[in-house]
Length: 323
Image (cartoon, rainbow, N blue to C red):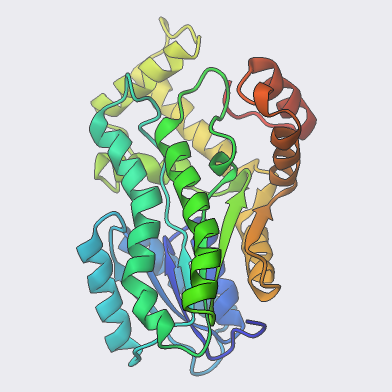
């Protein structure tokens, strides 16, 4: 698909981060966009930015509330897309929504673990299941599933549990790779790509806390502060003289650094993704750190989860994640 003009794209997680920037860049190329998110406020900002960019005349952008971990919510989203875009077909499906949380099978709650897994993996699976008939109805289609470097390297450091997110991203990667052959045999007009970003400047840290808590508030609850305190203590920090207000400030600062100090912006990442779609690449690594980590894990698979591996790699790419 060399040209997005006049096409219809569905984007999950369109309220912030790469989803927002995909929407902006697709609309700029004349593509109609239907985005979903759990936050109406976030999507309003995406829509405002698209309007400020100056959308081409006749381009349609719609916003829909949907929790991608719930199949019925995605089905309702699909029905709204069909009605509001007056169509039975779409051309591009970006299964982009994701959250973090529930890192440990042992110490984190089952609810948090499963919420992360169900958004990051379930959202991709249900997304494909739900929108596949509309892709089949188009003359050409492309499924773009967002995995992560954690889809081939299941850690963010030797002192941080990361099982739910990593398990989900491995599932997304394997599922999309299998789709390459499946679609070639059964629906050759549809392609599939797996996207594996490294550290991209997004609001996933702040957004994940809100989704996990079920609140759109920027203020942390007492339970959230207690959980953050326990996580930091486990990582080796002495918090005996640190107040709850300071804990909240530390969490906010971590989210700010993840967003603002990343080696690649969400806008740059979205361009890499869209260029990869145009080039019909099934495997899209995003960011220099993703490319380097791919090389390192392939070169030293037996050492990939040792502390020394992480420390050497973090020093090379300047990572300050994990611990």
